[in-house]
Length: 334
Image 1 (tube, rainbow, N blue to C red):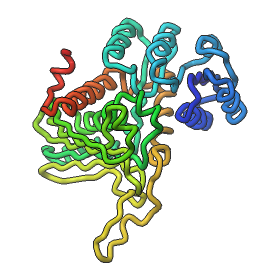
Image 2 (image 1 turned 60 degrees about the vertical axis):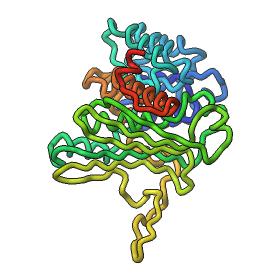
Image 3 (image 1 turned 90 degrees about the vertical axis):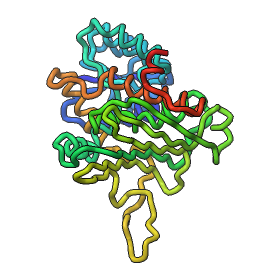
């Protein structure tokens, strides 16, 4: 299979490395507005360089991976779909929900598979948790706790353009809660604060947030996020039911220190970067995309899925701003 990659920043270069190691991928064609980035990828992974997205689409590729800046996502998705190319695009679909809805409408009449990048759906722990829930091992659920804590904030320029912590960071928690439980979020209540970098506050964002989500069956989900977790990159989920309780991320590289006497868990070196925590998940995600592109499976994360997580982020953003509960129906109608 011949894969085109549009965008060779940090995540694009990581995807190029992953794809170059997959048995299903024979060659890569890459493009980036910064010629040096494309040249570096070509030298490192034996890729061909194209001078534009259009040139990539015309280079005989079988599918396209989009890892460009968010503003470019809608146009690149539509260009690939109109060329009949299966598409993998990193989240989000677009900078705003309105743009995302327009993309969904624009591709509705095309029979071209599109996969949006939510890598936690391919992490072994989350996959096992979903299977346990779907098999009824936990009984009726009553509480879910989902955590994403970054070791340090991204650069100020990134924060200013990210859309806020709910849209940029917590959206991964929102997606995985939907995916693992199989339920939809009905209402949210969010709080947040700023105890760290001034540039986050100056951008109108919070650096630490909490959100309580009420799912459509009455299950309560609690989501915790922060840009400041000095011990490392902490991603976990707890799922509690009337028959059993399970956890994702409770392993030796968990960036948490126990102060219980005689307890040595966790014993490993803490995760300090999302690519470290989810290396295997990214590989499984792109392997799945090659199967989607080959017509052997449907998209495991559609534009519709991505937009549902986005609506939850919108509701949390409004809730934080107005200090009140917000229903998903309210922001969807707005």
